[in-house]
Amino acid sequence: MDDNKISTLMLENGFSERQIKKLKGKSIQRSTTLFNMIHELGNRFYRSLFMHILVSFFVLYAYYNDSKQDYYSSKYIFLYFGVLCIAYITINFFAPLATTYKAKQLIINISKDK
Image (cartoon, rainbow, N blue to C red; front, top):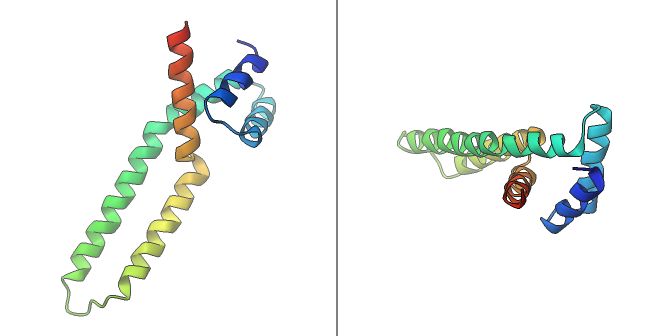
């Protein structure tokens, strides 16, 4: 599949022009095709989702345990919320959940068409 056809399919599946331009630049930089970049990004979806759920579980578990302590006060919720936000930003730096989901859906749609 050529890059122009994949770009058209990407637009139809919710990718923005900016995302497509970034992915094309990355594919040129890595000397690979746009389809391979989309496939690699789609494969990262489940890992990214798992990391989001795992981090949420750990932070909520720690918050729950600390809330039982005598020294607990309600201002600690901001600390845990901050930690959760920093963890999500770090995870999204490597594999943005929304973009990986769109890539996964695109791979599924391409597989159905074949």
